[in-house]
Length: 264
Ligand code: CIR
Image (cartoon, rainbow, N blue to C red; front, side, top):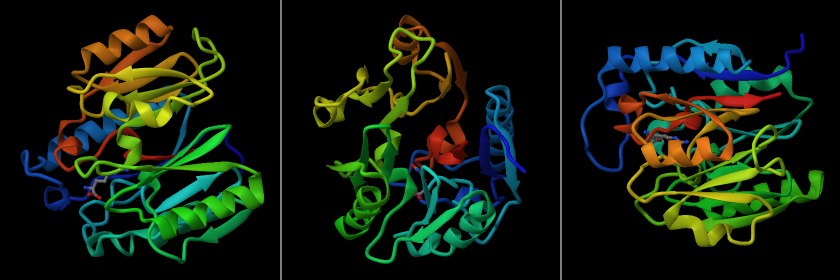
């Protein structure tokens, strides 16, 4: 069976209130998280995605963040290696759910690598070196990218207050916008790491947490609600912007892209 665009998601577990967090800014409300997740899924469907929906897994409070346990690199599915004991074991469920859609399969066996630290663009791979992804894991992915796809990788050392790279940057193809060659949205603090990029860069302001984490399809783009400057910048670039309430996931450091694994 072939679909044009597919999104793997997982229903939030009722244990999501025990999710990991860098600092305590409140505890997620389970019912509200489920409602916000539902809206997120509806928006993905409006963007043309066919959803694969995994059931909740109460054993893993953070299992709703399916972006992290695996990496999709073109036609290859790569099982990641989670750093935190509390999340170790999530890899199998995500990998198994996706395995039949991919022709090539590999696994990270050295060090640690989480999908939230891997940004793939047509010209280059960016890997965040974070409290979750180390150089061993990142280097193994870089070698895979080079060997199978002749793609170069750039490592980006993240400041400690950022959990994953992709919370602070996203890539958009940009056709139907002013930047058909593609564009990167980058949080102000990381902009120097992307100054040599082949793409137009939209810098999102310091005070708009997760402003740079967005999901687009042609000229439609979803962003975190309550980011007025980011919204304006994107409208100016030619996008139709859909802000989504994500408060319950933000409390445990989750952004829009963390909630799905997207592929075509
Ligand atoms: C964690 O600490 O692992 C979760 N509470 C948040 C994971 C967010 N995922 C992501 O940025 N890709």
